Image (cartoon, one colour):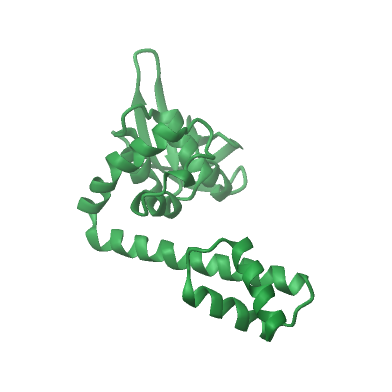
Length: 203
């Protein structure tokens, strides 16, 4: 029914925002991510909208991007996931992070979100993976590969920083960490640091 709203932001709190459009105030429920994108009260704001119709209420949900709204609607297709839980997912992770978790079949990345248990996380991945693939197979492949690459890079950076904090020189730390990750990219930061300490001391 509503595609988007453009108006003046009159007030904003972590879970909702009120927008004045031609003298009418619309209350939007928003994710933590969208809340952080909102301008200062009194400034113009643009929100993509989703209307949820219940027997006793009409609720508007606002999103700072079309991709966030699209993921919200996909989450609603999951068994047992309603608007409140879908918004919680979007507050706990950014859109690309949810996509990455789904495409990498990694439900553990969703466990920490309020209201999302192991069964719900598994259902989200099981029921949405094929939908995302059908929407954009190429994008899904890119997301999956990007997830693996970004995760490995984060492990490398965290391990390197840990070694520098311990007082090792940057060249020695970089050489050790790079050599270890070339052999196994699935190691944890702790494992990489331990192996790097042995490598540096034996060199």
